[in-house]
Length: 118
Picture 1 (tube, rainbow, N blue to C red):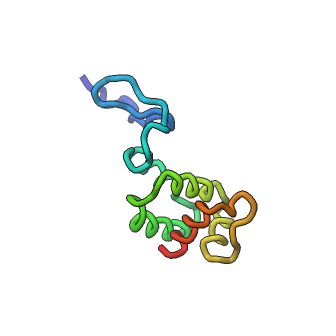
Picture 2 (cartoon, rainbow, N blue to C red):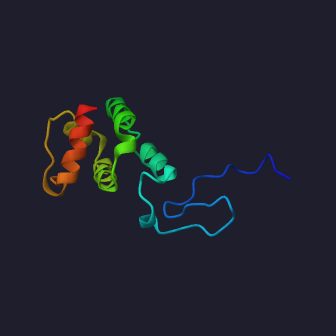
């Protein structure tokens, strides 16, 4: 019998993907691509929520247009961009700055262009 006072279940840890059939959870995220795993897509969208409304609006348009076309390399580049502070990210999105150092990578530049044109 369900306990109405039981805590809500949270998302599984980053490396685990639950199976409804009760089988073991898969922990190797390299087995599936971003596109074939809706949980990974949901986590990426959640991580893209930013403190600045302007960044949120850009990411919302970006995901509306490109979410289902993103490759795993695109997701990796987007993840690197999401590691930036809100202000640094906004400077890149609004072309106040260009990627430098490790961010001056072809995959990051490609995703940044998609974000700028979203």
